[in-house]
Amino acid sequence: MSSASLPQVLLVTASGDDPVELPPEGSVREVLAGTDCLLLRPLAPDTADLPWHAVEVQVVARADVPDGTPVYLPPPAAPRPRHHSRTEPAFPRRLDDDTVVRLAYGRQIDDVATLLRAGLSVLVRADETVVPPLRRAMIERTGLRVVDAGPAAETADDPTRPLQDALASPTADGLLVIPDLALLASAGAATEEGDAALRPVRAATERPLLAFASSDRVLSARVVERFSRTVTLTGCPTHVHPAPTASPVPIGRALVTADESAHFSGFDPEDLHSHISGLNPLEVRDAIGFAVQRTPAGAGIHELYEAVRVFKTRTSPLFTVPDVSFEDIAGYDDVKEWMRHTVGLLTSAGRLPAELAHLRSKLVPRGLLLYGPPGNGKRTMATAVARALNATVSLASGPELLGRSTQESEARIRELFREARRNAPSVVVLDELESVTSRFTPRTATTDGPQPQQSLAGCILAETEDANSAMLAPVLVIGVTNRPDLIDEALLRPGRFHPVSVDLPNHESRLAMTRLYGRRYAIDVGGVDELIAAATEGLNGDDIHGVLRAAFVAAYLQDPPVPPTPEQLGSLVGRAQRARRERRLIY
Image (cartoon, rainbow, N blue to C red; front, side):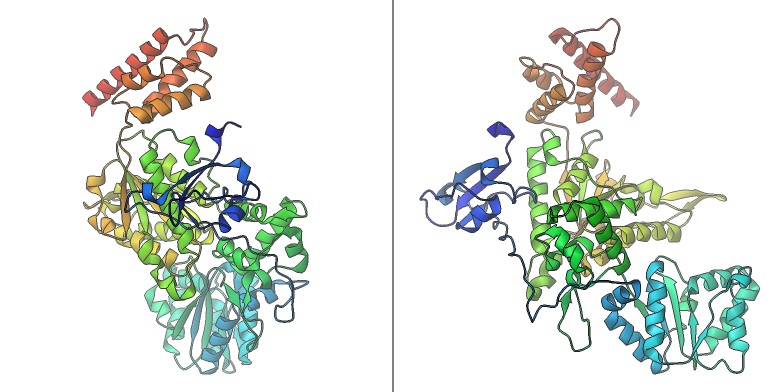
């Protein structure tokens, strides 16, 4: 491997101008831990664990670094393997669904039981898969007599009938439990009979009521007002309490069995949470089981985290594993450098000590706004950010989020962000952002014709803040637009969406693109690359890509073939320039 293709590590001596002595062996992380050097560029997550001889090192004296240049701390030393001791509980031998849910949500189960015993009604919002074990745990903890108002198979045609029967029974004076309130609420909204069934529930305020509804279902305000408290359960906590008086245990120790932890070399219970924080406890169990099946015994923790990331994308159609890195993008060195800086902030902010965690939102913007002419790889740049974060990515188009009404559009955005939290760390790319956050009123077609909608900027800002308020794993939103002049100014205030210009490529970027696409399509551009870069001024990245792709088609797929001579390449560049001028006439 040539030194030009090695990952670079740029060091600056932390004190003095004397050259620093670096040991020749060990990983990048281990070598830097033994020095007092700082970094001029944050390391990519996969570079820190490379062997020292597999990177190219450049050392810069502090005196040669201009004032105001950002510097970064080296990555922390790898955690030492943990050994079981008297004060550190062992991993469980077996786990069933009820145990897993009680461990993860034990505090909330106790709180709900206390409210119900006090005669107050509680609405629990949670993923559908965890509702059955949650219901069993909460009912058992209350110790109250229970009347189940859930629909049975024989009442499928009228899911409200069990509720009506329970209310009409003279002996039905216990805790009324509704396993799926959304089902009854939807029936109540659709039929007069169902609405009549819900009306007594809202009126019988002296009776404790425990109801469950999926966190992604929308309930009317008149239904929610019936309850004294709404408890929402999402994701997993960082630590759990196996018993009321027990010390907190990392979620990676409570929800992982002894055999599963032994399967992965260097397994760290503390670090697991940042990779599974958006999954509910039963999904965590499924993800760990998937990782064990997918990897050989003794696999490293990076293989575990990659398997968890693949599990998320296979169970969520909206998110995928990104396959583009910054190294795959030619040119735009200044933009890529700024993106790497942002990635470094996001990954470092998650390591803030607890007493400084409240500053995280002040250091990291809620999102980025990539703007500029079309065809310059803004979406590709956003995908590369996800790859650098070891995150999943969702590419959403603004027009696809627009529904028949503002309420429907907001519901689609909430669903997208709910999946983003589940897949965290994740990157949400909103293409054509101006279509949903325009300062002018967007319109969508309905059966009755176009209807005006409000800007959805407020909804996106609220969801972005909520997605990062309590999670260590980041959810980054990247907006993409060709019309920054249409974007709602509320998004561009300091600390919200940071604008990043991706303009037409300059000469250096066009030269890098020519060489990259030449290698990709086996076209020898040596000796003419500078000429092509000069002749393609005003073209975007897609245009330059098209020139080299057309040369490949002519040389290898056309009959008779046309070799990629300088004259042929010049002809293709001229054709691209003519097409650009015609586009200007059209638009």
